[in-house]
Image 1 (cartoon, rainbow, N blue to C red):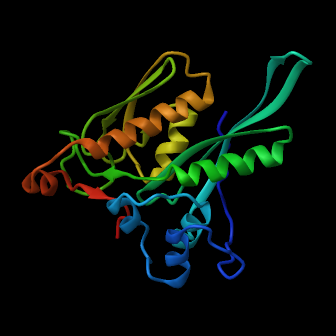
Image 2: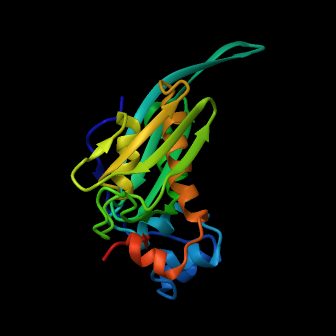
Length: 225
């Protein structure tokens, strides 16, 4: 079950010591927009970069489970955490972390989610609406992870997120307010469900549109002003 609460954490830029060139450029102020890093395809290797450029990022723990595996010395148990991060304004990421304790597992999942951050395309692709404002998705998208397949469909304004709790958490933190969803497979596996929804949102970025189509759909990438 997805938790309803999303948390914001303050980040101290002065205490951060960057280990990569991109991190040093961010701390010096040479790079002040995360869209520049994503558009240029620069490597995002430090979660602190996301903390510095997106201070309004929220974190939500979707699931924490105890998993076991067999070893020659016996059974080994670890905690697996699934986390989604987003600013509810065009950026979202999903991550998973494992550890012997719950706290470190959640922290690993948060770091992984920040490093997998993507820009989300929003718009109004529903034939029932056509308002041109970025409240839904511009067109249908499909995503998959394991046995889970998710299909996202544009919805008119006011419908809300017609989805399961996990997909609703991912879409909500991505900034999508109205959408219909279709799911196939074992959606009880929280990570696969979240990753399939995340994959569908990521696949929106690979659809090419003409300028007049973008204007008609109200298509916006990343932060909505």
